[in-house]
Image 1: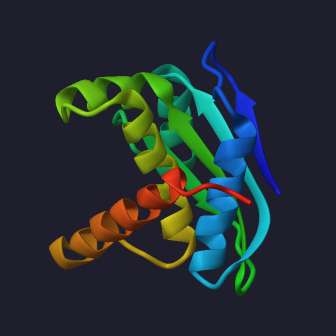
Image 2: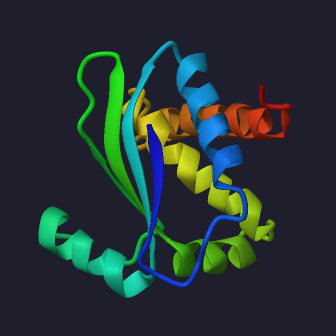
Amino acid sequence: MISFNYETDFKLADEKLYAEWISKVISSELRNEGDINYIFCDDEYLIEINQQYLNHDTLTDIISFDYSIGNELHGDVFVSVERVRDNAVDFNVDFEEELRRVMIHGILHYCGYKDKTTEDEKVMRAKEEEKMQMFHVKQN
């Protein structure tokens, strides 16, 4: 089950559409959907998570905690809406496009994709693009 939680004023316009898209992405990677929680927050909230659990003292747009069991995906995906807005401006893309990229990035990590090396990052970017295209496909 995909759930959306808010620790900031932001709210997704159509949670059902996003949940259906994420479910479809999970299926397309031949994985089973478990409990996936998205927590939308601000920079301050996310930097506290970053410091407390990862010992990092940097701003980031997403932190995902993977609790998957085998092929069944479970996890918490924390998204800084502030950081996504700033990144959208920096990358000259629409806020919603950058938000979808970040949201699906966490799911792709749960599917085993990495982004620490240049080669892994190329694969991750290609997968993000592929999965973002699925958002526009009519959901059943």
